Every structure is written in C-alpha cells, then in structure tokens.
Length: 558
Image 1 (tube, rainbow, N blue to C red):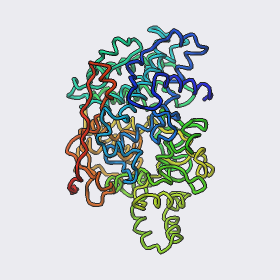
Image 2: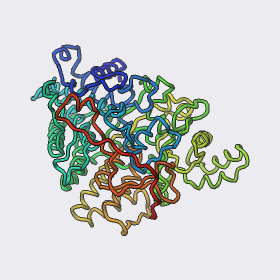
Image 3: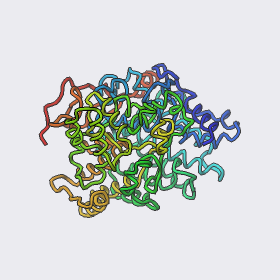
Image 4: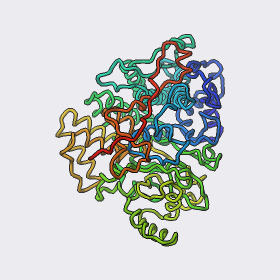
C-alpha cells in the first residue's frame, strides 16, 4: 500500500481519539460523521475506503505509545479473546501483556483504561465505514458502489464482533439481551447522548441489513488482493451471523456459497517452515498484513506486533520478540494437545511435552541443544531459537510451544524481526466455512452433519474416528478448537456453545493462581463498556465488573 495513503487512513481512525488511551475519551459519542470537509479532499472517497481495511494492522491507534505490546490492531483481539478461555496458556511471568485478559479480574472493569481498548478501535473502524457510507449516499453511483459495499461489509464485521464480545447471552433464546449502541452515518451527537444498547434482535437485524447491501454492491467486484472483502467474504460473514443466530438452513447455505473458488490447506501448506500461516494461499478468504513501514514494525524493534506475540523461531542475532526471547510465548493447553492424535498432522504445530522428558537427562547446554535439534528435525530449522524461547520462560519447558505461525522472509526473517514479523494473518479461511456448514447441516439432520464433519476431519487425520461418547456439537467444537487455534474464535465459541472452561486438572500447564474451572460461561467473557460512554450516553448500560476467582479450582477428572 502507498505509504501516504496508509498514513491518511491511520490519521482518520485516530482523529477523534485520545492518544494516551486515558478515560477522558468520549468516543464513539463524538464519532458521528461530518462529510463536508472530507468530501472536498482530493481522492477523498478512495482514501476513506482504504481506511476501512488498512488500519486493521500496523498502527499504534489506542495508546500512542510504541511500547504497548498489545496495541497492534485487529489481530490483538484474537489473543485477548482466546486467552480468556482455556486453549491458550499464558506464562505466569507475563505480567503486563495479555495477563489482563488471562486473569480476568477487576482491570477489565469500566473504570480502567484497558476497557477503552475495544471501544476505541472498533468504533474508530466503524467511523471509517460510516464516512464512506455517508459519502456514497443511499444510492451509490457506479464510482462509489464498490467502496460502499466494502464499508457495509466491514461495518457488519465490526458490529458482529462487538455483539459477541459484549452481549452476556447469545442470540438464540435471548433476543432481548443487550449488546452495544449502534452508531451509523446518520447518528447525530444529540442522538448519541441518548443511544441505548441495541438488543440482540436489533443488532443482528442491523448486521444482516448491512450484509445484504454489501452482497448487492460487491456482486461484480474483483479485488486486487485478500486484504479487501469481496462477495465470498460477505457470504462468510453471513454464515457467521446465521451460525450465531442458530438459523441453521441459512448458515449452511451461505457457508457453502462462501467456499466457492477456495481449497483447504494441505499438510504441506499448514506446516510449511517458511510460509506457514504468514502467507495467503487458496484457503485464505480474507486477511490483514503487517508491512515494513508500519510503526508496529519500525518502532520498539517490532516488539509491539502480532509476530512478537506468536512467532518463536527468532535467532539470537535478533534476540527480539516477547514470545521468542522475552519469556512470554502463548502455549496450547496441555489437555487439548493430549487429545490430538499423533495421526492428526495438526499436532505437529505444537511441541510435544515428550521433549521435556528427553532434555531432562541433559548434563550440559550443548547436550540439551543437541537433543532438541534431533527431536525437532523436520519440524523446525531453528532449534536454537526454540531453546532460547523455552529457557526464557519461567518454567523452562518446551511442551505446548506453538510453531503454527512462522516468521516471514526465510532465513533473513529469522535473523531480523523487521523482516520476519512482516506477516499476513488470516481473518477468514475456507476451513471455518466447512465447519460452519457441517455444524449447520448436523443441527438440521445429524447424520448429514456427521458425514461432512468426518470428511473434513479425515483431511487432517486419515484415521479420524468420530467420538460417539460426545454430542455432535462437541465433536464440532473440538475440530474448531484445533483447526482455528489462535485465530480468535475461542471466546465466541465458548459463549455460543454455553460452555465453561477447564484449566485445573492433573498435568495442567496453566500457572498456579489461574487454574480455574467454571460450570458455565465465565462472566469475564462479557466485556464491560467504558464508564465515559455510560456517563455521556445516559441510555447506555454496562456489564458488571468481572470477579476474579480467589483460588484455584479442584482438579477436574476427565
């Protein structure tokens, strides 16, 4: 992307935001659209369309500080949501990065600055969409119709996330549960001061209305790359919406439509040492990316970026990255890893705890490194970097470390994070659509859904056997947990399936103090609305401040 265009886009999203992230901010109340000046700027419409997607990654939008490790955009919310559950394990030494969400306590309450984060970013992105929609008008011209379609698709995606993050109950059976206020291109400042939380029913009606417009306006759009939504992404968003609403026939229909033209990732693509989950392929439907000129890459040695949190194979020549060298990698839950059969090649994304047993006999660092190099032969070309990662953690262990997300740029990227962290990250894959189709089909006719699920699973594990001791939806959930690990779906699925979490069990790798088991959806998964919004907007109400458990739970017996 042209550097100047990306700068304009970044300035647009940040124009009404407080750079320090303090609580004096009153966005989105003041986030209504004024287009008189905007419409006069040269090439303004196209720049504003660009802003709908270009600001998803790479900019310090929330804090204004290049030393805020979670301020790198849309994919940071993947981790915030996923660590709230059980499938991603944070280190007990991770004292200031994602522990706020992992430990799920009072700091997520409405009077704390961190509560501002989703409010600032999501409503900033929505404001960008509102500008485009307002400029395009109710009947977009031929020159504006594609931009309007992109804006409607993105606005629907943002509100869909907000609804799922803030609503204490999902749509099915809870149409009156409260989500967040809706700000559109027509909302005035006066209206914003008395703008109640939309109910589930109203919110999802609004989301589908936006997606209907996007489907119409993007019908003939041929995109230049996958950083922009096209018709297939609109179908995918509709599939997600109908899945959440449990309107199964519609979810199945759109999930199937969304798959056209895409193919599943092969084992070679999934596990590729150089391009694994950093480069788009025929499975990826939608993505965001970090580039070399992004502030998240150029500042603070690239440490405030997605790659810093998720990429381990960074050598001593760089010695950067919170995951690789600073002792705070994100591991897979030990029990979930244990349930992945050795015949399922997705297990190769994670280092087996068996390696810890092997290195226990080492009497020197040289011997330990040799054992690791032999064990990881064919899995990683940078075993020394993996040793550095494990040794930097408080536990000093290898088990559960993730190799799903690889550094970009080959050898150069492993030695230089400003190359290695310039990765693409998938926002939607065809595999997700296949799992939605299977679940939706099975909720109408279980045998049909089971067949689709088995067909999917056998592409990953030729010896896959359906677990007849569990429900159909539990079988689906397990596949989603493994296939989409680290891609931001964990909390949404826990809330949708009305599950609890399990961190306390024999052999757990969750740190002491955070080993909690819950019977139902934990209250910390219902995000609070920042207090400045409820102070300014008298009709808006927030969820209660979450209460952190006071002690570890008794161990669950599986």
